[in-house]
Length: 449
Image (cartoon, rainbow, N blue to C red; front, top):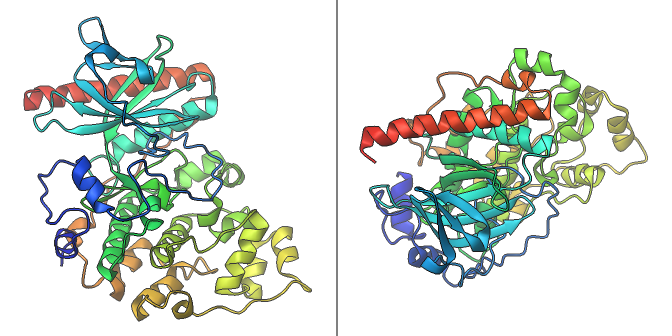
């Protein structure tokens, strides 16, 4: 059974699936989560303290505010030149081809609005994310450049968020980087923590789509490094899209050697609850297995409806892992090769036995439990690859190999070696935006927009 048939059968979101249905429809979006704990303002409270403040570009629609009075009217729009309009409530200055619908979110990173592309034949609805203060902070500029390049590189895959348009505005108070991307209704975290009931088919389809997206990313020798439910967007039709590539890295030898393995590790700041233990306990090189661990944690969360490992700090995080999968054997501890690993597991520290997945997740069948064992394990040599996960019996009745495409080339991270100063970064960001707009203009002319 295909993903489309699953959602048609089980009635998640739409009563039927139609690929031509607009991606964003308020009535159907609300019906998806009818009688759930996600209300019209998306007031879901998730207790995790996320310190990265969603500074990445592909952050989707989060921290949604009450926007019932935020839809644009003629009084709120000022025309600037021939093709620019100002939307005062959000301090937005955008191309007149886009009409603001409402403010969706505000945060330290900037503001997100929904808008209609008036020139698109199907009047596509997009999310416009304005990233503020980007021109003064090196870390934001570098992440922005990396993420724009990766989103452009991975464009076209249905399980990865798509970049629609870009713009840079320098005029205050409208200044910032404007990123126009596909608009999704929710992120997976909000859906998981709602009262929407999941069938086994829902869990399988969500998980399978995540795996298809990760396979495409890994095929380009890229690791995401920040996979978590909040970085997976979802449409009312049940289509999942991975976003937030600001922490992604290359794993080919050329990139690893040039950037030094130690810095490759220490710059990692992804969310603790989904962080593989080797990232906490060792400074050795790591690879795609860190993403597999995160995928396993998301899989467990789909069954348990709460994060599997909730650590207050890094050491507590490791203890929480031990309580579920047991204390690692000595050869794994020695393999970490660090004092912190030895001290954490040496006597008189308590030793834990592995718990049974069936006790933790009684609704998970045998194949699901076996797959959890293959993803959430200490030994990275035994941890499954994304290809092995897709081959697992758990996905046998849902798998469609046509969805498991790979990228035909690896991503080139060499641009990071060339940007050393703030001035270099500003210039590269401008070039990236200009190049993207040239390609978009060529496509628009081709299709007659």
